[in-house]
Length: 485
Ligand SMILES: C[S@@+](CC[C@H](N)C(=O)[O-])C[C@H]1O[C@@H](n2cnc3c(N)ncnc32)[C@H](O)[C@@H]1O
Image (cartoon, rainbow, N blue to C red; front, top):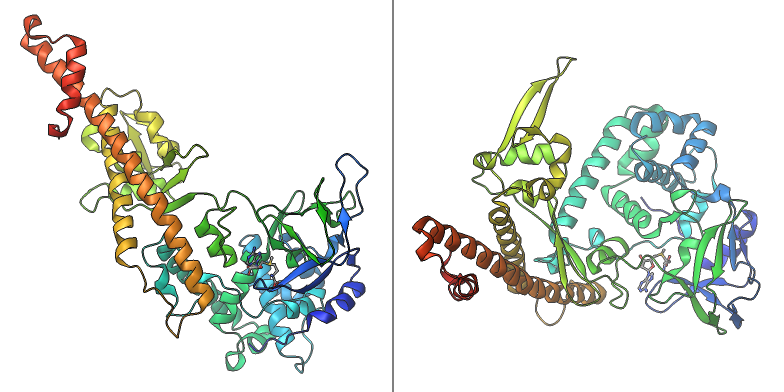
């Protein structure tokens, strides 16, 4: 879709027409970050002093979210037919459908008018033609992510986008007003859809009252670990940009906001196409695969109902914390007291129910750690769990090491993508190495606990004369821990 572009110098005119007020800032090119917001004079927000006025004010009716798309559909019956046929699948899907239509209409200016005009149709033309998120990396660049936590995530995202695009195509092809605009001569391509998804992901934000939204002009602000500004909604529901208390900005300095201080390097790269090592959270999420020989694996996955994952994070003291809702369910079996039954409900439908020790726990499949905690074999279950987590992380680390790219990008790889992939690889290698070490230690402690319990039982069965004194038992236990399997 050859979407026309508008020069950023035209943004003030668009802003004026649409009641957006730039008080003391302007949008301009920045080095290496695309557009950004600059302050052309010295500014200071003194702590405790009366607030300085907002730097930027955007009226509420330009905020783009599910409610705004619904409003637009009320004015435009053609779009309503499309939304009814394809949409109402959540904020992101509805906003993307709206953007697709606006971009398609902008790309066919000579086409007989379809659809009520909207400021977003022009605004889209100020947005970058590409975003460096991995879904838009080329076939030569994506392999740079092999072995990282993004490898599977990016593949899964592209498949999901493909399915969404196919669905829109299928459901809208026989709608008279849209089949020509969207699909004539391949007007809209899958790459257009990936680009719109990337624009949405890298530019949507969470507003206190309006929720997940896109806000024109506010979305020109770049991220910094120590940002100078923040946005909020005014009592009149405008979106306003304010200087942070105690912050001063000098003439020509960039005004920045935070895109969130709890996002991992992978999440930043996935959503925004860059990693800020200063503010990225030291954490990572890995997919977890059930045991291939587990006869209950399929039932466990259906009952759990989400993608099984392991979360690993390093806290401020440097300690590794891990968590996984699925792994506890994954590591218990029928002989431990797990059962699945298919029950008929009152409407004649069939339901998969999960039982633990004969109690129906269908609604607690993500809380198995809690359920098994009081079981006499808890330490055994926990050791299985720790072993699975450790093996998953070790395998990931080995794959990451064995897929390391050469020292320099090839002529078919962009420098930026190469640099970001290398940074991600380095960050993930560090946290995986620390996690393997921490899990080895945790597994060792569990093995010693089990060994002690085992020796005490053996000694008890052998009679009182054989019972070791408890201090000695502890020492022997730790010395022989490696023999226990
Ligand atoms: C909300 S937009 C900000 C405006 C954007 N720079 C533009 O040209 O339209 C987010 C995008 O800006 C870029 N960006 C923002 N902060 C950045 C940073 N600290 N380093 C590098 N790129 C950044 C990334 O491409 C990101 O996807």
